[in-house]
Image (cartoon, rainbow, N blue to C red; front, side):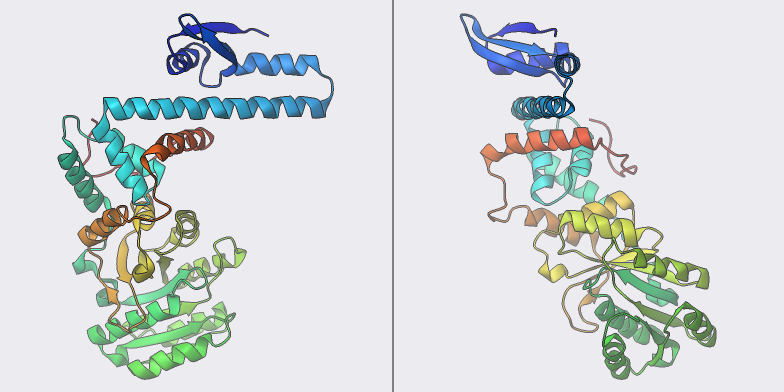
Length: 384
């Protein structure tokens, strides 16, 4: 096993030298005081792995050694990332402040690191925050007012997770469609064969709006029904909701062959990981998205982050149960301002100043496991 001794004025300087000479995966074996500061004994991770495998023929013992080396490696990475965060904060406080703003508002590390890297140099703190706001507004994909889906008409089905608000949203869309085309030109189709009472709930909305309601038990029946409804200006189809991991979610994709366009319904109140799963399952192939439960969402940053990265146009936002009052055309400026304001909320989940170095270490370890993915070209940015 090849080890090296490093003497430095302090631990931070020593760790930086170790990383620079032995690589990011180096392992510190020991530390002790030295007349010149601190002495660190370190080895490259690969050298330790070879030594561990040569010292034991026991597979279980080898696994334990490798696991311990992995733990030590993670500790070193966290330490170095924390030191790097502190150094960056002193060297480029404005850029770090931009990242903190995005993290606090619920935006993910991929987008936060990308925008921070593209922050123009020379900006003061206030100007950098204005730049960030404008970039987010320009890159949040919202449908143009002249391209309103309801005004254009067509056949649409709402897809999303159980409890995402699809049926209520469909009723709100139907009410807007009645205003645009008249009740005689709008039809509702109940195609949810799983949820008890789904058709009854839709029937209430149909009676209130004065539109026709039709039931399709399977795709064959739906195909025949759509032929009968060819003269309708707007046909809205209510489908069953499933968890993103449920294989039955693919049933809605089969409607593409019938000329039905999908609209993803994403609850903004969910955690970022749940929003991302829903976007990957329901957003792919959808023509647009509706963000629901905005009234239950103090920090919609995660939802906006997912929309920006996946470039899925936001057609409507919904907050509340009123039909159709609680359905609105999206305003990118309003949504971004609300997200950034949410990052200022005083909650037990907000990071304090002393938490940021630890957070940086966790993010660095996560980034190594899942390297930065390609981010779509962002409008209004340039390399700093």
